Amino acid sequence: MAGRDSRADILDDDPFRNQKPRVHRVHSHQSQDGTIHFETGANTRVNPLFAQMMGFAQQQPAQMHKGKIWHFSDEEKKHLRLATAAFTVALGFMAVGGVWGIESNGFSSWFIQFFLSMPVLLLAVGPAFLLHEIGHKIIAKKNGCWAEFRADPGGLRFGILLSFFIGILFMAPGAVMVAGLVTRRQNGHIAIAGPLVNFGLFLIGIPLWGIILGLTGAFDADIQGASYLVGGQLIWQKMLIDVGIYWIGANLILGLFNMLPFGPLDGNKVKDWNENAFYLTISMFALLVITMFMGIWTPLETLEMIASIF
Image (cartoon, rainbow, N blue to C red; front, side, top):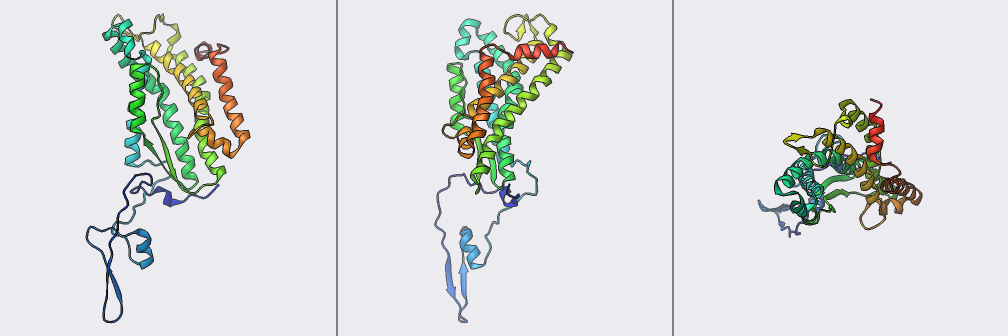
């Protein structure tokens, strides 16, 4: 693995920001002793390569932060907040069946369920999305790359509108943008990091939420229906159980989806690096997801079994 390159953390320049190339004007004159002097206007930025060749510094040198691998710039934090907020709203619309849920439940019940579903799904699915992207980021930075998350406004808008009108969530909230020279092996490591984070969260989630649900006695409550508010009473047990169920299911589905060997998905890069690693990882996710949908095992039954011990 390549050593850590501190230049990967230059924060003032985003290599993926589209900027129109500028024509840099540099004026020169020669003094009587033969020395050539270069002059730039107050508002002119000298091309960095030209400046280095001619021996004078840029007017605004790049600033480098002194943090470690686990560092997030202000710009990255803004994009993460935007993507997380839009993702949460889309999950809320999905939970109530989109706008069509108003007809069957009435606007008041629909809105209350939408409002209460958002924190449940944020707690359950938010880590699956955020930590997946952070997994890519950390491995990319360990390999000496510039790596920061950037939200996709178009993908966020499309996902929200789709979940609102149809009640189906399909969203491309953004991705970790990576700049730097890496080998095929390193690129594969960066790509597989995200799905492996999801698998780790799946494994952790089973005992974690089983213990939480057991200690809180959530399964002991008489829960009927899908609503979180019944007769003015908040059914927190139902909310807590759903967090555990969605946590397990979301990490498996997200991991499987990203391992598909198409387009910009992680699976394509992993397969390009090592086919054995690709088939092993995607088969692991596929087996768990298929058996879950077939009812051979379910997150609810698994959590209930563990909770019964406590």
